[in-house]
Image 1 (cartoon, rainbow, N blue to C red):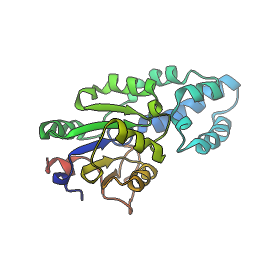
Image 2: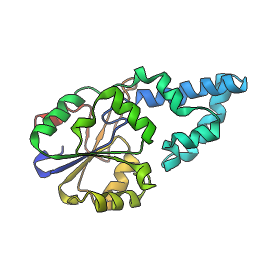
Image 3: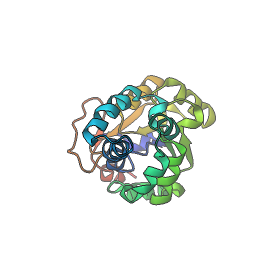
Image 4: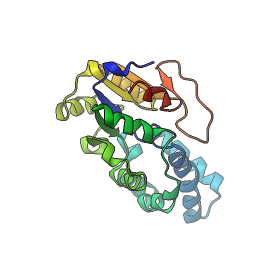
Length: 218
């Protein structure tokens, strides 16, 4: 488990870490295929067969997270579609308690997300989490996803932090691998990023199911 006394700066992912990944999974794997099927007069299953390989091909690239990119490729208003089901956006259990405890601990807290600005704005509006962060960093502003080393280099240039006293919490193991390569000393992941899916087993990094396990240290 992470020793929070060794961490002055806390970098937090958004989707699947603070927010329930069920929204994004439902959106991309169910809702978008439904709308695509309607547009092209095909079955939802046919739409999934066409779309899911396209999604897979872009994983880990900034385009995967870019609403403008998918709006152009799919000829759908992706930002508008997200707003249609915004009621599904929700905070994972005990996140608010954790953020409040972090604020009281006087640590520096930075949101680092690959989410597109439109998606980020919608989710901040729905969850009201924005005041808990000293900085909000969107990978699109850097032109590089968190999976790429260049992201972390720019992050440290713009918001200097001591890699040995920094904690990153992220549900993506690929992102954690990238952060580890960059030299961030303290890395933690989430075993239940999607409330509708079973707890996942993680071997490579310390992991928590929810933030109660960290609050006691703060």
